[in-house]
Image (cartoon, rainbow, N blue to C red; front, side, top):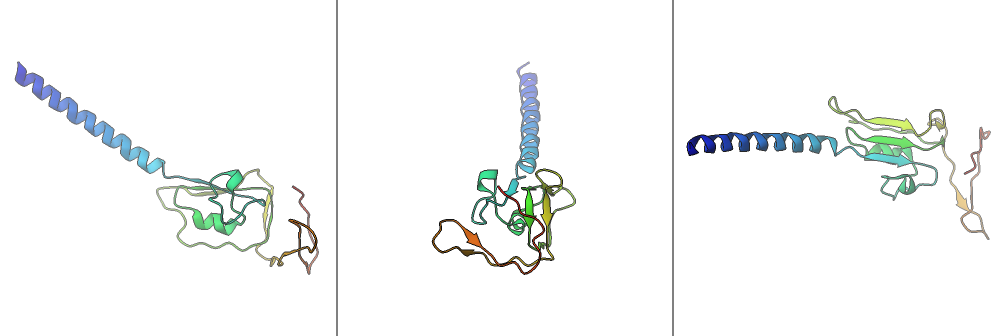
Length: 139
């Protein structure tokens, strides 16, 4: 009788071990997905993992992505060209999206001018645009 109990105990322990192993394997593949943020108030030195610590440029956000991650882009016009090789995989979907549909414009055809501090003021910068300004976004 005790032999049967030992065998039952060994089978039960083995089955529980396999269940726990499969659960940990599943969690390890799904927990690695990270959500990143880009917005016009961000800094590329930020972690990018929340709206309050967002990246400033889409390129920095795209560079941070791993297969399965998501990049959320805040409203505004971004004058930058974005490039990345090796983004995504067949097993995990990588997503790049606007936080609000229709509110992001990526202008890779326009060079962004250099912004310089305005003398005599704090946190105010100006840039010389050579073309027509298409829109101004106030935040």
